[in-house]
Length: 364
Image (cartoon, rainbow, N blue to C red; front, side, top):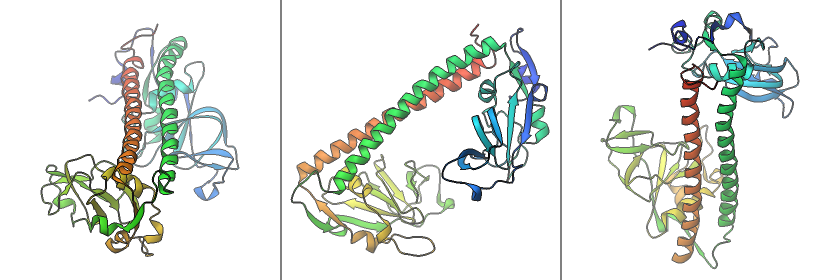
């Protein structure tokens, strides 16, 4: 496979384009010259870029204008971020600024913002050598064509941003719905009972990486990820659809209702299986719960079967539970559909970039 920063990757570009190494038209500057660390972060101020991206603010301006910030060390080295206005750089980053007579920084960002583009050295702690940055090859179309390509890519970005705004709005409505659910605003005269009286509550089973077979049933572990941690055929416990998984170690709470007919979970979780409650109602109500008061105060917070089982849950009528469940399903479907459209925008942009940035398809 030809690495995209190699000379071979630019051997078949259009004749009207140039193949250049970054050292021929890009100024590379190492970050960290101001010795800033995250201890210097303030609530508001000048955007600061670390190897993770723009993740804080500082009180000092190091650079202004536009530029590309490259993560140079770590698991995500090769990830690039577009900077404009005023900003400062932390250690483990590099700033790339192109000669505007050759290429815009915005176009450069589209070219190099790809972890698979760069030569990476090291294993446990991968990094990009400054020399490999300088010697990386890129295809350079005329400035007019660069602008046309950016316009095409920006149209997709605009569509994705619209979807992101829609998703944010839906999430805000959803949070408002859950707050009202917590306050009991959707049912009247509902008695409250301990969860252990209306659900089976237990701890997940002891499963370690060696037990994972890659097939069988999905395994969920502590955390917030909706996808399974792994798959196994070595399980002793098997939950039916409708059983809620609650993270019981480290990240406490984060109730999940897996979309599988059967699954299991590790000892870092609790399972809550409803006896007569609607599973979606149970899941939605658990999402409103503040788990901190019922977690043990140890070095690593823990949620026990006893504390979970003692939580009192309202028991509305069947009709009220079903109505709440339908609203939750509506919100979840909306979120899933919008996220799917955002993912499609990413796929479309990735495909267009591979075609347009290397001249396989032309805009002019």
